[in-house]
Image (cartoon, rainbow, N blue to C red; front, side, top):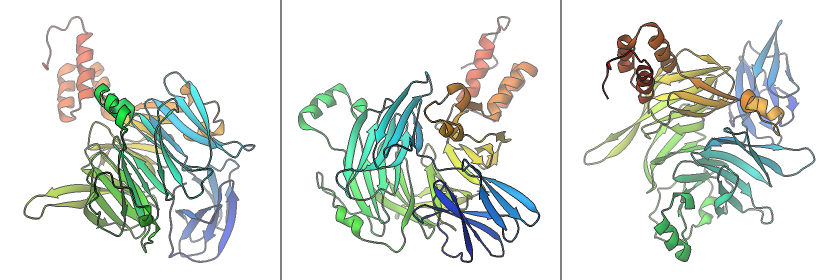
Length: 455
């Protein structure tokens, strides 16, 4: 379940426990269900039908909630915030065995089904990007010290970084790792051996190499740092009245969400503050598109909004965030396309929507978590089903590859209306994958003597 906080709601609360938290109902003018974990931390707010539910009950596996309202019974699907990620054709996820204190971390190859399991103590976060997984954990024999660990698809550690602050929120891009406490942001511009040339490896094997690191306080402008200067983690001990609640990062930008709804965006790798924008609610999930020109915001109520970053040139250059004309509700997952800055996939309840700009395609029935969106195909995994038997994931049963509508339509048009009309359709909906499908179809037709489109 997602993290959220709404201090303005009060009233009579009747708790109902599930294995990892409870739901309490609020008696107000509208039906509001509040979710908490076992530490009393607020996780999510759900608006329900009617004025107030008379009763609340969990399904045994914790995936659904039944609400008794007047003479009706409503059911709510619960989307758990699993510790998982997808990278390099591998799904990495974690689960707990009742007889063990450690987390069991599984690296599951989606190509051949091979699994590599690791035992990790005090694991806090799991996420991934491209060819690396990021793990964040507390050091077992040194409380108060934490480690950020980069692993490959076999679970082999490649790089690590020890920090003296609790990483409550983490994110990773192709070039940067970000970890944030309530008041400070640690930025690690990393490099791994797999990304270095042979000449660089020879040089670094003698000299050693430390990735560039920065630590900034969320209330202060980033200060210039001398090369080789040690990170001063005492900055993280300084409190703030507006805590960090989310982070997002790309190769070029960093964005930090705060509980007031304010969002601060920085340019990378120099870590300079470009500006801020006030959102109407608490941002929980922040993500950039592939060109870092737009970012998505999903708040603690499940509402989705988009912002576009405009660079204003002149005597005083500025980067301005403009909210786009789009709002969706009941959103629990979003992934931007890797090869098109206007395409993204959104999960709403039990439906997947593909957006081109602010216009959605027809929804696809699905409850899967999105792994990757590229070449007009969305790869996703049924994490709820995987977690029912986490030691035995199945490629056939738990993985899905869904083609978006324009790709499906192209294939259908090639069979029904011919090359010329299909070519016009592709020109109206341009994408390299569509032209590839078109040209493969032409090449397989032995009686075809010419191309409608030469390339």
